[in-house]
Amino acid sequence: MTTQAQIQSGTGRPQSREDGIRQSRVGKRPIVLPKGVTAAVKERSIELKGPKGSLTRELPPSISVKVEGGAIVITPTIVGRDGARYQGLARALFAGMVTGVAEGYTKTLQLVGTGYRAEVKGQILNLSLGFSHPIAFALPQGVKCEIPADSKGTILILTGSDKEKMGQTAAKIRGFRPPEPYGGKGVRYQGEKVREKAGKAAKAGGGK
Image (cartoon, rainbow, N blue to C red):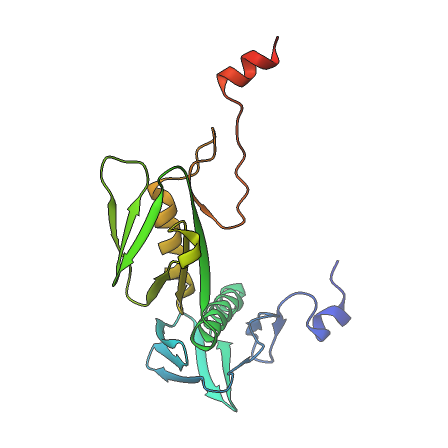
């Protein structure tokens, strides 16, 4: 049960202002802009610029956004739980954008299999994944791919400022050849543990 002290300290349920509008415990915290990052609110969208690029997103409904004192401040504009929920959602989205334009995001993929290789030419990623023909995948704008020379074409390092686009791109590449349960061949996230199944031969041998 949430106590009055928890509510007042911000550790319990969303707090209500004097006008009855509830605020999200996390969403009401200002997002401090790092050095070199700027934010601008234009009508119903927000634009962020930083060392790693620029991002623009439409504002979720039922919230008001201001940039003041080097921080992004989000407040709900409707009474009830929905306002607090949209406030928390907006903060999570905008905080991810701030990190993206300031530091960027990285996704690393690993190709496992005999003859599995990758090559980048401009924004085209060519993948050899055991099919009869290579796969030519056009990288989305804002996503770059590097292949370390010492990996012999088996390691892909994706970088970009848009967290969602990065995740979608990595998932798309992995989807061309997901890791097989027998042997583990395919495309996997670096560090991903693939649960492998024992083949028929192994099962037969184990039963002797």
